[in-house]
Image 1 (cartoon, rainbow, N blue to C red):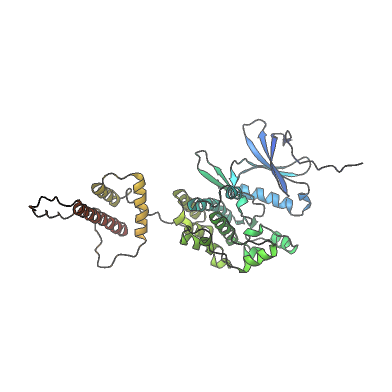
Image 2 (image 1 turned 30 degrees about the vertical axis):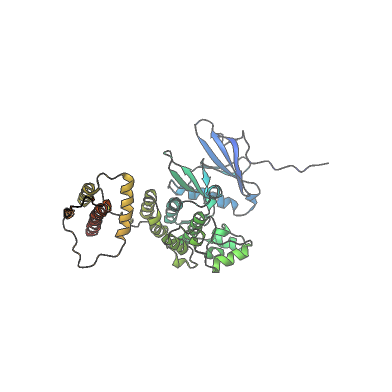
Length: 422
């Protein structure tokens, strides 16, 4: 009786790769390759090594895609791309790639564990990923396979979140798409169906940055709502939906999503590429109002990468200008010391006020840099009452409230006028 032997894994614990990387464990295995964790034999360095499986090498394009991933990752310098440190071939002839070892989870795993993300966190994650994609686009590279499983969330040494884009195996130059064309003609789907753009599923040549913008929109929709915008059991039905059906508005799934953010997501999912944000920089600018300060930094980097002037920062009401110093002093006189949390709240509310319609033309703007807060008019003393009944506290409280309200209104109007004048 004979038994069929099980194919041996291309790398097992204890194996030494390239005479310097000792394999410690298998991290994961897929249909195309295996990823192992290894320790450098002479340096205190742990790495991840991706190795192509023997059966994958029988596919005509697999090795080329593997090498393309390595070349794309090396050419992009952003911290938001997993670094590739070495490339080679095992004695068995299988290609391998040495990469930085990441700790954390991809967005697919994060969604399974936590569900929809807080709005600012979701926007910031997309903006960090967009930094990597922005640089790739400048280099003429389209990722073409963006999905939650290819966006990895790890941490910096200071504990802040760091997003890295993985798997540039399907990346292709914007001007040369011959490989994609030949594969499509062979009825091979390139990409992950749920995240593919309409032009990608039609096999059009010349895919550009707007295909990645579509995929980023699908991912943002999903991490905001917990659902994908297009769902179907059969691939053909899914492709029909992507090509012709409008997605349901994200706010139907999660009412707290701002209407403006919903509009950005839906614009990314326009069927015609010309109706979407045309670049990652344009997408980043649209997402800016919903991002944190860290997200704003990502937006500025994206604009610099793509040679676009970054959006102006909003004026500060407490620092950096003479007007701000005068306003801070006036607020201190009116309200006393203000805590940092209260100051942040006031700053957010003032941004809303600045977005309101302009004051009527007859209003005279304040001139110069000094803001004078007028003292409230003195309250006339109450008439002498011979009755022994004491004045009602409610009347005094009402007067005091009105005085404070007048002062608050004056300060807010002064702030708005000075910021508009500046």
